[in-house]
Image (cartoon, rainbow over all chains, first blue to last red; front, side):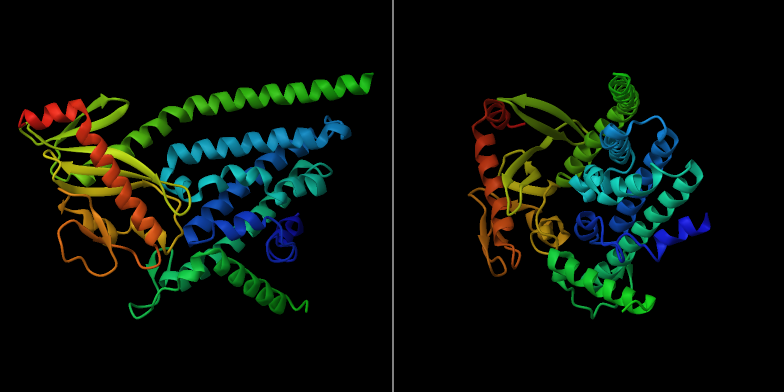
Length: 194
Length: 191
């Protein structure tokens, strides 16, 4: 059980190891807060649809399983989108179209296919939590790095002093690719795989 | 046959449940979302016309005008939204002008998808503060260096298109507004 949870955070981290869900990873990580909100929204969808699909796994016929998964996933994504717009409009404006696009995040459908549709509810919950938080962790790290090098702050707290001249490239797509590849390399180095 | 029936049944039931849940959530969230939009609009009006105590909404030729009033109920200016296409998608602005339409009192960016760090700087106080009490008897003009003449605005380095869109949008909208009957009445009444 603990293993199901932990593998998502480290050994099978969706971003650093599996390199899945790259669209939101690259697009919204311009700051810590954006990365965190996207990570948590995705975690919610993963956990909710994981629970639903795992409990219905014996009822859903194999031939229509993808269609059923998509109904469930897109419903939860729409719920998240509406709640974000209603309660945290500023963050919802920052994330823009990437919030409803969680529906196309391949981590979510991938976990249902690979795990939730085959395993009992408790293990699926652990797997979804692990994968979701692993994704959120990666987005927070990437968001912090980019925010730090862009304007010298992390979560709007000043880290580097006034002398720091902002690096515009870090909030642009090129900066996203550069920071992500450096982080993946660092991750491989630490985990001793290469 | 049995298998097909099961497939149809499962998908139908899932669809029904999903529809039910979504309509409940939407019923709950829609008024809140509407309220948020209203508040953002209101905040923008108070930002572009800081002396506003309350305002009145008027519609003319499909345009919505916000007539800002001071505490005594005397009109002090007009606020209106305007949009133009920027470097990446639409830029939507709230513009506040004095009641004689001779000065821009302030602008606020309501929506923009400009590149963060470049065009995105139109949201920054440095750019927006240039429009505080800016003379607009003639069309506003964009300059590269620090402004020397009235009505000049300095473009953001590396974001000429975004800066230009803001200026052009304001000019166009002020000229349209001037021609509206409601505004003409408003101007001639000397209110």
